[in-house]
Image 1 (cartoon, protein in one colour):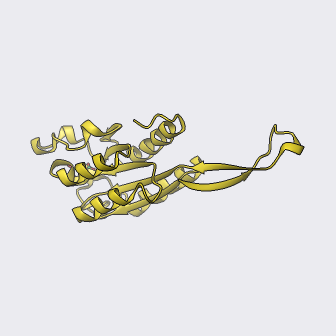
Image 2: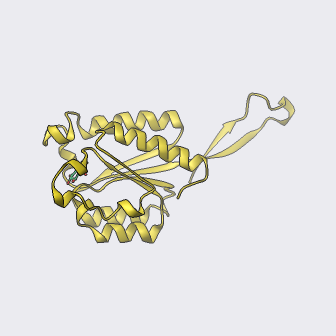
Length: 173
Ligand code: DQA
């Protein structure tokens, strides 16, 4: 967890005022393969906005929550596995994960999440349940804190709000 120091104001008596150390929540957003093509790729499913526009909005929202956010997109399964493995040591408290096509294939990514035991929300831009049969199974849904599917880029923002709420409540699982 990253540390930030805030000067206590408000109702604390002046003589008792000091620097109070608070812990900022740290959230990692992982985007799987082909999500770098957002905005160009099958807009009927994935919308018109780009990944960088999505990340900009998400960063702004994270700032309003006072939490740290890092986003990574990779087309390579092993890079996503590495990110998950390194997340606890990097101080990450919570993951927002759109595994993209790896949703339906990746036991390796599932095992990495189980190994770290970090809480995560599974996010999909499209409603995977309204699509092909092979998209009906996810290797992540049964171990996720929650799932948001079919709400486009807004889904990430709602997932971020939910993650912050869960972390603040100390109720990560
Ligand atoms: C996706 C849905 C997956 O089935 C697909 O392979 C993707 C994106 C989504 O965000 O809707 O690449 O995860």
